[in-house]
Image 1 (spheres, rainbow, N blue to C red):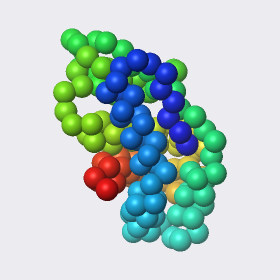
Image 2: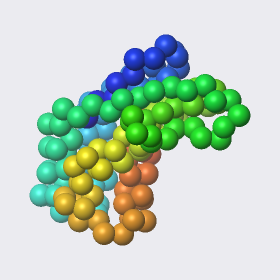
Image 3: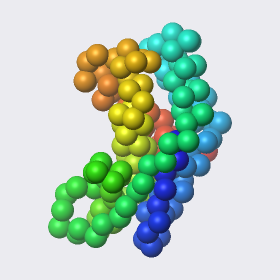
Length: 142
């Protein structure tokens, strides 16, 4: 999985670049494996991580200037959109949010949560994806 940004907004470019570094980071991979091992068996975790590693899935990221909107990072028909008009926090906060959305799109593409992780409950699915976003935020510190 890789995030692709072709826009000109420097902070969005840096967020996307850092998110891609986190996805490839050995620390993130290790933390993700440990997180998933708490909830799933080793075979399921290996299948999930292999799917993530071997996937050549690209997710487009766009930036929009909407200073009066409360929408920050959201999924639209083209991929992920970032409201560059209200980016006023530290970048690592946005890295976690963008990766949470990226894993949601990844899940929608491959149906990982249903087929691999066997998640049937929407709340559990959101918890797992938010947990991955949180791991991405902490991996950004390394």
